[in-house]
Structures are given as C-alpha cells and as structure tokens.
Length: 117
Length: 114
Image (cartoon, rainbow over all chains, first blue to last red; front, side):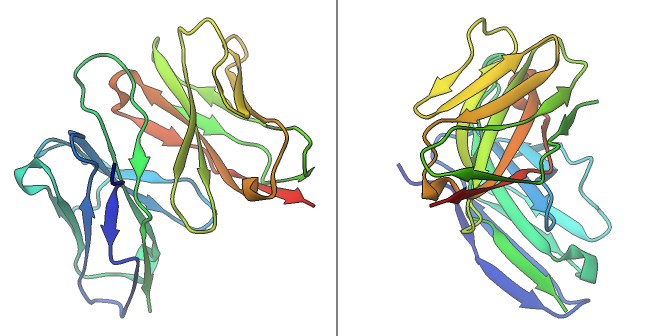
C-alpha cells in the first residue's frame, strides 16, 4: 500500500513570494490533515478535511494561507505571500474518516521543508 | 482543551537496554486516544502505538509498550531492547473521540549508544 505522498520535499523562496504544497493521501482515507512543524516542536494542526469539506480550519492563518481538496482526494496548501516566520516543515497526514467513534491513527507523509529567506 | 507534556528533551540509552519516555496529558474529553509517533531524521512521522482511554490493558506493539496510568494522566512509552535505529524524536499525542483534534507534545530526542 502506498503511503502519503507529498511534494516538493524542499522549497526555498524569498519572502513575499507564493508557494504551494501538494499532498496525495492513502487510498480510502477520507480525512486529510495539514500540520506545520516548527523546529524543535511537535506538529500543529492547520486544517482538517473530511472528504472535500474543510471541517476544522481554526488554526489556519486565513490572511495568507489557503487550502483545497478537490474531489476529496489530493490537497494543496498555499501561502501567499510567504513571510520569514513561515519557515517550517509542512506535514500532510491522512486517516480513516469518522465512520464511528473509533479513534484512528494518522499516517504522515515525509513533509515539505520550507525555507523563507 | 487538550495538552501534552513531554518533560525529557533528550534521553540517552545503551543499545539493548530498555528506556521509558515520559508523557503526561490533560484533556476534558471523557473518551480519548493516546498515540506515540517516531520521527527519524528523514522527517516522516511513523505511528508506533495507540491506547484508548477505556482500554483495560496496556497496549503493546513488538518492542513498544505503553504504560497507561489513567488516574495520573500518564502514557509513558517503553522501548525494550533498544536498537541503534531507535535514535529519533518521539512524540506523544492525544486525540479526542473521532480523532478530530490531535495535540502533539514537544517531543523527546532519544539517542541510542553502541
């Protein structure tokens, strides 16, 4: 079974430039998450999708960040314009959906390391 | 609100010995799940083990076991027979029912010495 795929793995941009990250979740996983992981910290949730619907975007800085999950499969996270403080690793994860009260583990992709100069 | 505390920024263990990584949590949800993930230098988060709040027995997965003490809100990870490949960051996480909200701790970096 293929894992969560993310691209690019690394990205270096200048501040004020736009950047986009792409994620392809595990087949059959309804729930998709985007996390940001700052150096020396654990991941922090930015947005969660159930199929194509963003059901939790309370931590997404909406003035510069946007995300979409067309057709409930692949997802794209965009930053425009990027700031120095956006330098971090952006992780995508997926899990089975909320079919029951069971709590499912999340499977993570390798992440995109963003450096804003 | 949920919170995870990992008080050990770094730990050293001799190869083949056991090591315990500490994790305490705080949640107001009556039902929740606890997870441990491993993050090697490659950056990918690898799921290790899961404990449900109503599970009577401590979870085990191969060399990993979770020492769950509900009254103390503690969910320590025990790695037996450490291997050099266990050197990595380890994150504890708590998730509410349905997995809608998952909070990660700051992590513990484990160093396994030959």
